[in-house]
Picture 1 (cartoon, helix red, strand yellow):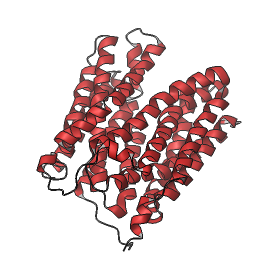
Picture 2 (cartoon, rainbow, N blue to C red; picture 1 turned 45 degrees about the vertical axis):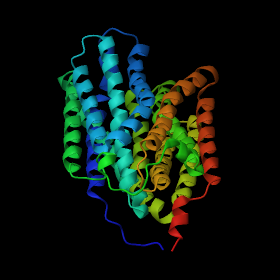
Picture 3 (cartoon, rainbow, N blue to C red; picture 1 turned 120 degrees about the vertical axis):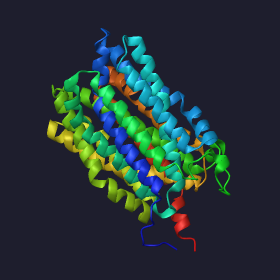
Picture 4 (cartoon, rainbow, N blue to C red; picture 1 turned 135 degrees about the horizontal axis):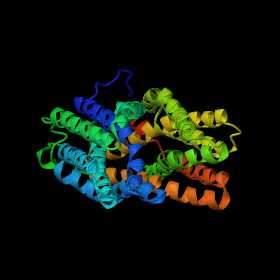
Amino acid sequence: MTTTSKPKLPFEVWALVAGAFTVALGYGVVAPAIPQFALEFGVSNFAASAIVSAFAGMRLVSAPLAGWVVGRFGERASYTVGILIVAVSTGAAALAQDYTQFVVLRGAGGVGSTMFTVAATALLVKLSPPNARGRVASLNAAGFLLGGLLGPVFGGIVAGFGLRAPFVFYFFMLIVAASVVAIALRNSKAAGAPSTQNSQLQPMSFGAALRIPQYRSLLLSVFSFGWSSFGVRVSIVPIFVAVVFSGDAAMAAWVLAAYAAGNAILIFPSGRWTDSLGRKPLLITGMIVLAVSYAAFPASPNMLVAMLAMFVAGAGSALANPAQQAVLADVLGGRSGGGVVAGYSMASDLGGVLGPLVAGAIVDFAGFGWAFGVTAILLTLALGGWTLVSDMHAKRATQP
């Protein structure tokens, strides 16, 4: 039977949400400075943008390793070591003397980023109460969102001290995040090494998860989501603003801010609805909204309409994203599964890496309409995947 009372969230959840906010705040400060700092070494615009790809590429290829590390050493050690790798590589990047050093250090940061991301997600899905998995996912997303919104505000101040200053700021933010989580989880049995845990549930392997239809739909869904929200949105949308509206970086920032606003308005209600209505209604609705908004965006006649389209896309993202993490938790059912979480992370990262590359090539050969149209088609395919599977949460809720 279902319950209307709100289950109390484990303290580990709040520690990880605080860590997410701190990491996102620091990244929001350093992100704009990364390509600009690369240009200081006298490289081309392509080489400067490749710094971002190096980080994302290393996140992608190191995901299986991260899953193994989490399964072998536990979430607490994996999170702490991973975030310290990012901290050290970021601090060292502030001292980089040439482009090669900068690329290598950012690539190393990508490895650490995957480790702490997989560890945090694995612990969140393991500890989320069955009737609060959507709520936990929305809290975690809100931590990243708030940090990402405040980051550029601090970034403008920090950048005034030079292009190396944001890297130093991010270094200290990562140290704070690592300290908060390490101290908060020091006595957590759930976050320790598997050998110290008393769970009667055997860890789930990636192969076992692949035999579950909901997990296969989830991989397609997060790939499409990564392609659109983490890839096309941050790369092709600013180019569209510059080419079609002759807009500068500030105008592009306003369009992206509209997306964040739509996301912020629905992120908390979405978590509650995911738990009360089930995962499937939110996933289907969110994917429909995303597909329609991305398909309509290139037809925007002016900046106001473009901002409105991105606002709607942000709302669709808020509906779908917590439900995706909740499905991951449903699949694992309280078990450990570093490889399962790594596969989830890898699918999202693959979409984020391929999205800008493929959509950018389509823009060059066929125009913006086709690029955003392909994105909408991918989201529609993910929508179709969810219509073909049952809602694991709904089935459990009806059981006595």
